[in-house]
Image (cartoon, rainbow, N blue to C red; front, side, top):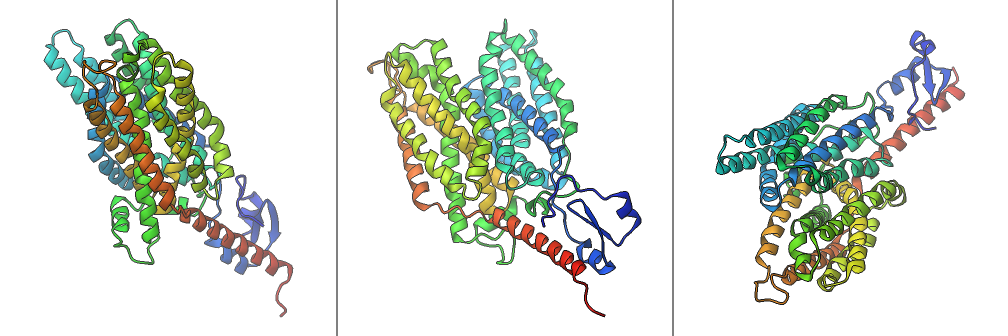
Length: 477
């Protein structure tokens, strides 16, 4: 008989009679020994209030995503670089003050970034002064993105069971690229840049109070993993170095360490390639005669197809591949690699249909794998926020590298067509294909966090069964 019941509550009769036990809603007389036997047992529960936290994380990530790609590649790279130290700072802060204060701190950073940007549009400032203040505001965007993204997997672990964690992680992590899409599609339609900056600041201000909806942790955890303390970044670093003792919950053997390195590499490369593609959209398609409007539609196809697929497919992925997430990666990763390689020849004149089709497939497969990669990182490390932080750190680092390398590989005005980015496409496809091949060759993906959760759940159910048996067949006097 399972003790996992979202609606378990202690009745008035049970409160009055300390020798009464309530299991799955049935109240039965029990000995004091029975009560003592379960007095220290944890009852795993789910709470509907967990969705308020998801709503908060989604809204904050949408706003941070809007601000991250507000002005194009230069400011995007500033955010990418500033994100690197922000990762370690955010994990440390989360361990010290918890999720709620961390997300509120992220909201404060968003307010500072937006209103500093508003101050920069003052007509009394010189162009150089405005540019400097704009760049300074982007540092707060990086701090905000760290606070909003890194806690998402830990929140899923604290509030959701093994069946719901992939879905929860999906909702909170597709919000950031959704915000980028909103920024690139909606804000340019406003009359002036000043209007766009002011609108973004107002939206950030309106969203900030939602940060108070999120709660630190549920009264009862959903799983064993949700009942544990956050180990922190140094624990993960020591685990990757093989310095943790064998009896440590975060101990990683050689295969675990290899698995995380492979996740680290492929997650960073795939996300960096997808997120930076829109930065070079005009440079990639423009030499072949595509208009800026058509390029915007190509970029929007990745996001729209990906977001729709993630919302519809993440619950299915979580239930279909929940016991073996690596199979989701083994199915979708080769498709992603093949599509990026195909882009080398797919970008050519009068090929709108082919480009739309490949962009849609890339978006669908990439967004479906986004929560899977984050959850696998938590599975092999048993350290949700530190692994999430390391993965997003690598995404931002690789995006920084991608922007520099692809810009350097642009052809000159004497090429055919002039200023084409064929070499950048070759680099992009080759890098993704090579990293994907290494991943598929060496990844094992044992889900040790899930295994521990199920063992603890089985032990709890066994204790309940033993108590029920002792009540049914009391010992002879």
